[in-house]
Amino acid sequence: MSFGGRLSIVVGLFVIAAGFALWAVFGFLLVGPPTVDFTSAQPTGAPVDLTVQTVGSIGNGYGDHPTWVSYLVKDPQGQWIHSTIWKLPAHTRINLTVEQFDSGSPLRNQQWGLVQGTVGGVATYNGKTISAYNSNTGNGVGHTFAIPTLGINIPLIGVSPNANNVCSQAPCSAPSSAENIIKASFMTPGPGTYPWQCFVPCGLGFLYGNGGPMSTVGYMGGFLDVVS
Ligand SMILES: [Cu+2]
Image 1 (cartoon, helix red, strand yellow):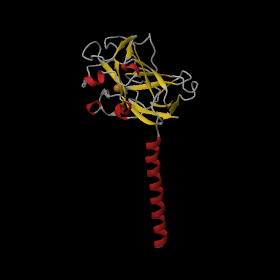
Image 2 (cartoon, rainbow, N blue to C red):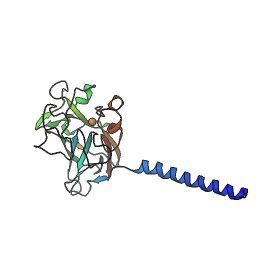
Image 3 (cartoon, rainbow, N blue to C red):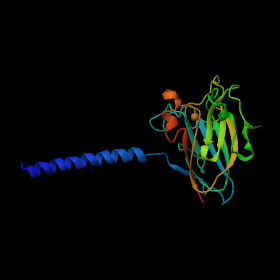
Image 4 (cartoon, rainbow, N blue to C red):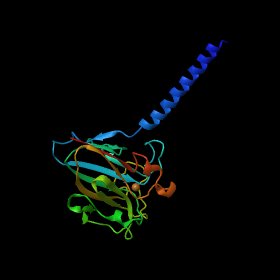
């Protein structure tokens, strides 16, 4: 074979290999949870009801990590969606309900037990108004819902670890599964993308509890996609 023929084979193989590499990299980077849209669920300016749940292990039917701890969100049609990316209207009151189905533990940082940045600086825990929760009491705190750029933090109090009905397959529902309901309201700011996350290192089995679901969008963190 001529030098030119061999050169074209080498170049051709290189182009094919580079193409596969780019396809793999972009495929890995672009796969993510769907954006759940709350902007057209109600008249402009009206409060938005945002209901999420936290589950200790998401279970089967949600991809490759059935044992991972996760959030889910209820879309405006009432379906539970495995996503942490929510499209919300700007300058609007969000009435958040968290259905907490996971157990808890004492916090490493008691700051995460404070309710901060919500309307009135309070939340309700099974109907009782709180401005802080001492995680060294009761069942501790399972997760937090925090939006650092907005100064928002809400501790999600754990269910009893001794309950014989702790949910391990999403979507969870009460009363068949033990549940705590935490509610709070907050105002969305102007348009932008605002990351939110849990600050409790709840990624069991990962380094310091901060890998796996704690560092994967769709499980213990996501984004508010705030639009005008
Ligand atoms: Cu968490």
